Image (cartoon, rainbow, N blue to C red; front, top):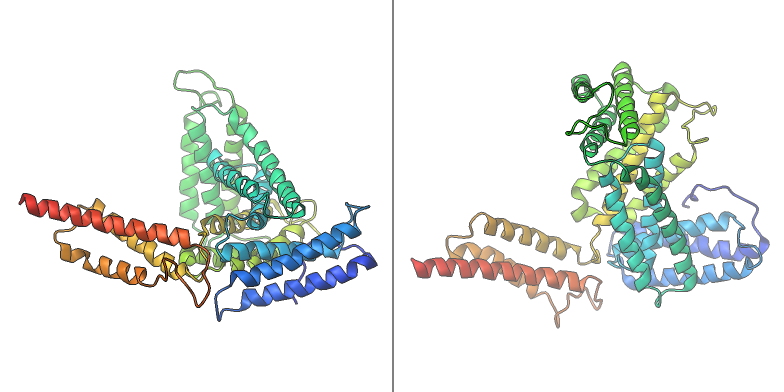
Length: 442
């Protein structure tokens, strides 16, 4: 049985018990489907379970019509179901459908919360999430006539919460003048590099000292403790950059003093977070070929539990005592980094069913190779194009009436694959024309 999402458990209304039982059964079925690697995930299986979840949401709304604020174990199991359904939508290639918004907003909300807590980030960090939230809102608009209003209202609330938090984080950076932006971004980068070095298996003292020296160089550019613009004026926004600079110096000193030794009282939490971060890092290297989006669920839930086990925002030991500052900053860094890997995996997910991903990945590799050939000056004879043409023709011959079939199924992502195939054929044609032009001139 899968453990619940972290949440406060309250007594359950007897009228909600049948709903809970049904949701637990759906969650178990989703879990079994997720673990089955013998075949690809079929759209109809996911949609059937999705319909069952929505049916329970409608019943729950009816039970709670006089008390909308009520919370119980039903909500935590429902959250698990929606999280899994959302990841399944990505797995079957329905990335631009409304339910896929759920898992993305979960991860973005965590990331924004942690950026706010850590109190250091650059405009570039926020730009990516801003663009993602815009595309998610567009997905909701497109689904307004397709999905039930109960689901859309839930997703709208989650999206609005993320947008509000993003706006709050963007505000301090809006007043940062152009002359201070490069310094601010450099400081954010240094702080992160120190944090990463701090979690290495063997502490790289020389690397951290080098980063500390870069901070001293930045300090050397100050005049009377202020950063000066090229025209000699003192730009506004000093306090944001100076505060960050002070934190960088302090953190470098603490890290060099501790040399990677973590507070023993939170060593088990540190080991768990380090292991999760390392697993996600490995996954990120092979993602296009091996990742099933539902694999991220287990990581999300482990991180959620660690995050929500904190007391007043602090990591605590088994007695409830908070760890020291070095441990707090180190654990928060690992937590945030892990969620960041999940975020990148989600936004990198292609709108193609996992059944067609092998073909899609082959075409992407072919496209990349053909572009590299073109940019390096093309080919010297038509013969050099034979391997590419043969591979493209073999993929093209897989189609039945213009569609890539798996048994009797037509998996999601036909448009993406056909577009990629056409682009590869165009690249081959361009290279062939170029070599024919060269030969005719000679």
